[in-house]
Figure (cartoon, rainbow, N blue to C red):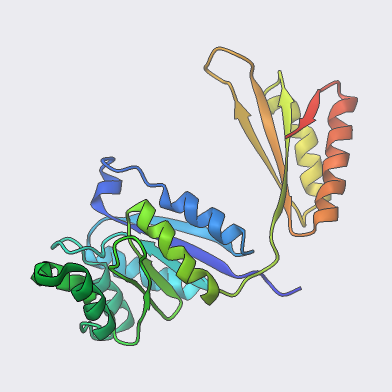
Length: 249
């Protein structure tokens, strides 16, 4: 089986780092790519600073099959993502005729200088359709540049999906262990992980520091569905032997 495609996410914007805006795009992208069998292995958040954006983009695009950026492609002075992508690739940043036509149709007489900024696409880039506000994103090489507004970014993914090489989907099963914390299941979970290194085992506690039941969710992940199910059965049996109640979510 060939190695699954890998991806990185680059989130751009001072508003994320300041805490003014809470990012949800990483979660959306991770779920979208996971469903296509593409592993998100890295994510970074950088501010509206050219040097940081260019350095991060060049590092990520060299290390992964795909890079997805969000933010910084609007009409204002601090929307510098297109400029930075052009600099990272060493290409010019002209107005794209198709992007100009799209926004001329949308804005008519209100198509001003600021809005024309959104038609600048790095030389050699292709447009990503934006069915919400029309202002396009773009793809250049293995980099997909999209809006920061979650509703718009998510809508752009419809045009992105057909361009991607997919892999085998990761299967996941979640077990709920009630009444005990991670420490009570750590040894059993560690033994299971060592016995099946082709799978991923995760532990996620809940209820700590709040009124109500405490417990732990155990997640088994892998691309071989029968192997995941077998491991879940073995883990459940090992916990049950120790008197720990387990239910499947």
